[in-house]
Amino acid sequence: MAGRKQFDVDEALRRAMHVFWRWGYSEASIDRLTEGTGLGRGSLYGTFGDKSTLFRKSLQRYAQTYHPLYEQALAGPHSSPSAVVAAYLQVTLNRIADPTVPDGCLLTVSATQFPALDAEGQATVRAMIDGLRAMLQQALRAAGADEREAAELALCTLATNKSLAVLSRAGFSSDDLATVAAAAGRTAGRPLPLP
Amino acid sequence: MAGRKQFDVDEALRRAMHVFWRWGYSEASIDRLTEGTGLGRGSLYGTFGDKSTLFRKSLQRYAQTYHPLYEQALAGPHSSPSAVVAAYLQVTLNRIADPTVPDGCLLTVSATQFPALDAEGQATVRAMIDGLRAMLQQALRAAGADEREAAELALCTLATNKSLAVLSRAGFSSDDLATVAAAAGRTAGRPLPLP
DNA sequence: AGACCATTGGAACGATCGTTACAAGATGTG
DNA sequence: CACATCTTGTAACGATCGTTCCAATGGTCT
Image (cartoon, rainbow over all chains, first blue to last red; front, side, top):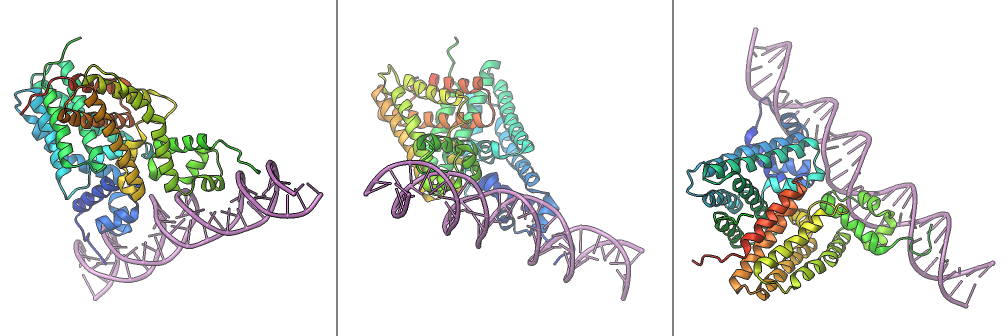
């Protein structure tokens, strides 16, 4: 049996995150989590707490993994707002193209399951999405967009991010996904007609 | 008790559709379906079959309800491709603004739960999404877009549709949703730089 | 070596899952 | 009125759900 932990905690959390990512909160049963992580029930509960807590830790693990990639892509300097959008969406495309992780995006899958999440889970998801939005908006400002344009482009780029995840889950080809991302990046930088 | 059916079959199906729409397939338990429809277990199974069958019938009921609205909006005539996009997304915005139906869109919720669906459910969802895409593409061609532009715009408009559903599920304001839709409609009609 | 403690796998809990079976009651037909 | 037919509510099924408990084990410390 055991005296000291026989597994890598962070690696186990990474695998649990993949289970939630692939199956969504509802279908991520404890059995699937134990199978996916290789841990026994006792180890799972003893290390991470109950399912809701493990889910929130998986969300944070997700942010810890992918937020730095977005930050790096957004760091710039970028010549135009459209370059910011393109850089951001490229990170998303790269993640979706990674065959070692599930389709779509954990945040998007979780967002569509909002009614199935408890209050803490909903708050965590919402906070992470808002964080990405703010990060985008700031980078767009830094790239020369005015306040209104930055807010709008940040929202639309976030929306494109979500749409890529949905289409990926539904089995759309990576060509189709690239087309969507390219179109979003292409139209982003063009001057907006003022009302 | 009963001798002849004591409920309206189509109304019950409409309510079952709302349960799947709100909760997603996994969280739409038989108890929630019986509560949402007002039917007993016996009536549910006797009328609609098992859960997977009822889910597919709910998807078809969804298409039967909203496809005509999209068709009508796309029928035109439209002066430009961007008018087609705007008309399509307006139908989506109207549906999302309807307080009598759940947030988001049944197709999008179902798409993100793909791994939780059986083969028939996955095929039905995918076929319905492909149908919308084809419908959009044809309307864009009719509005003067060339083949390449119609294909790209149809895909991007479908993507925007999905993103609106996700953002709605996550609790974004209707103002934000309208902003996303307006931006998609605005950039759609503009001439694309050819490679 | 022996006491202490964290960790492990597995048994077991009550609750809920989707589904089926069935008796009781209401309707349509003779 | 009797009969067949259909519908309805409920009980019950085995399976799985999330969670807790516990004896057995191996490492750590004196």
